[in-house]
Length: 186
Image (cartoon, rainbow, N blue to C red):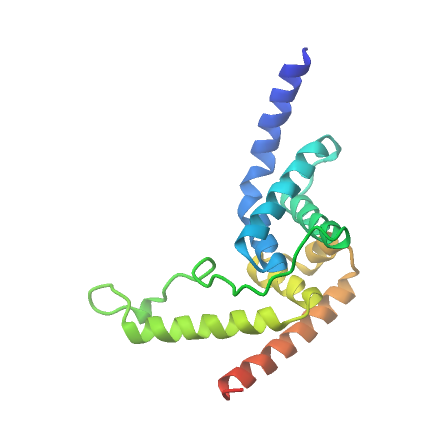
C-alpha cells in the first residue's frame, strides 16, 4: 500500500476516534488559558501533536488521551515561555446551561428576572473559578464540566487519585469562600 493511502487511512481513523472529543479539548483549553484565542491555538497544537503520535494510541478512552495531550501541550508551552497569560474575562455565554423550565414564562420565553439572576449567578461562579489557582481550577473543570471520574482525572493530570480528591475538596472550599465573599459584596 502506498504512503498516501496509509496517511488517508490514518487521517480517517484519527478523525473518527479523536475529533468527537474536540469540544472537551476546547473546554479544558479554555479554562487553562482563560481566553478564546489562546484556547483555539492550544487545541490546534494539541491536535497536531495527537495526530503526530496517533500511531502510539493503543485504544482505550480517546477523550482521556486527548485531554492529557491538551494539558501537556499547555504546560509545555508555559515552560517554553510561548504562552502569555492574560486576564481576559471568561466568555459566560460560551458555557452556559440550558434554561430551567421554571425560568420560563407562559409563552415559553425566559423571564427577564430569571435571565438576570442566572447571568449574575454564572458570572459569580466564573469569577470564583477564575480566582482559583490553576491546579485547583483544572480538577474542578475536569470533574464538574467534563464529568470525569477521579480515576480519569488522575490519568489526565498524572497525579494520584488521593491528590485529585484533595485538590477537588480544597478547590470546592475555596469556591464556596469566594462565592460567599461575592454575595456579601466583597
